[in-house]
Length: 146
Image (cartoon, rainbow, N blue to C red):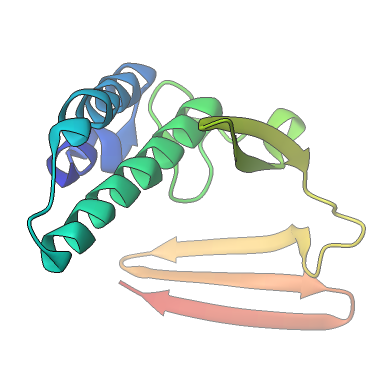
């Protein structure tokens, strides 16, 4: 499964086509291969449960990536290269009902959210990311080196 999710066109530069291709491959594995698998002992049973969990995890990631038709932070969509705060300043809420993923969005509650999201300044240079969060009278600065 990792070979399906890790290619450059899924992990870095996403498009609807590449995301749908990966999702189709994950669903094929889940629907056709996993039901035929078994475990001869507890060790392999744990491995089988792990593989099934990865399948669900990757389906969630791919479906959320397809749903978000914008670029935001580490989620870069080649087919939607711009940030869209008007339509996408939202959280994607994912739940499961009758073995199906249910996806909906919820606006980020800017009035009650801990940080003022409009006051975040990103400074990206070389392999360092710095951001400044303005929240009321507090000013917090964090840096990450990559």
